[in-house]
Length: 395
Image 1 (cartoon, rainbow, N blue to C red):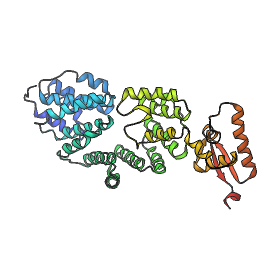
Image 2 (image 1 turned 60 degrees about the vertical axis):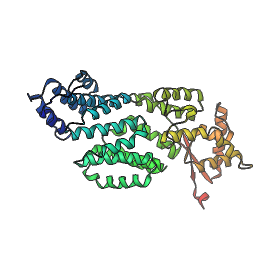
Image 3 (image 1 turned 45 degrees about the vertical axis):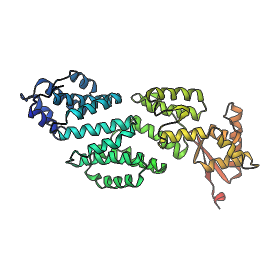
Image 4 (image 1 turned 135 degrees about the horizontal axis):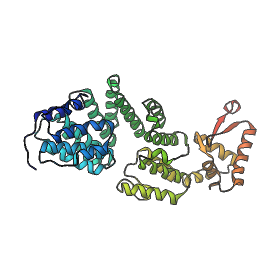
């Protein structure tokens, strides 16, 4: 591809994108811009409304001009990335960075590295992130938003490398900027804080952060919030998984992951394998055989490990406590976990899942006897049993 002359006006517009909202209206009537340059500016404007199909249609033609082609690659890469075609977007970001090398496009180079880092992180190409950060640092940053973008990326790298102290230092820096942040950056800060607590296995703090994240626009209506809440509730309160496909229509990965957990919880191994197979089709390097994942310390992987380990060991642990009555086993189980779903409680005490109404009646009778004695009060709420100590027991 040969390098040809491009208008300085086009470069000026590109450097204003993201800083001056009027740039898109001004470009429409600027006769200095050729037709392809006009389309690229228009495509950048469409990113604000997430109209990715129209962006791809506007930029489907290639150019012999390196500058124009670099922007075609970049804006199409962002559209593909946000449409779920991450592998394709990575190649486009790399080509864009290469073609921009000889141009004074500080802003666009920064955007390209930012998106390349996120795409590699989302595709779990973690080994590439240190080099991306290294090259990205050569680009000067000129405002708080760019400082935040760089700091958040460094934070992600520290978390992946188990560098908790360094990650905490960045969180402290971000917290100091919170009053100056946009709403989006404040939400992203809470996501970072949430992930730091996950790394530390502080699930109670995760729950508190999730409550704060509900305040941001309609975040708590989205699939990501519902996914995180289901996992946090499982880790904090042992709540069962309730999964509805309609809640995850735009993100099948989250639906498949929660479905795997629901099936493991219900001891439906065959169906769990079916959903696991769908995940493997999407990312075979991350979702490996035997319900193993490439990363072991995220909420999903830890939930899979818990459910897999409890397949038979939990019941054996209770049985090994000596000659215990069924009432004592029920109380021990409820003391060890805040809430326990009825089928799980039955399995801990009897060693198998509830299969008949008469078996459920056995559990209900044990609980009735415990409550009648007055030392403990067991309540049933939202599909789970929970233990409440009475004043007599506490004394």
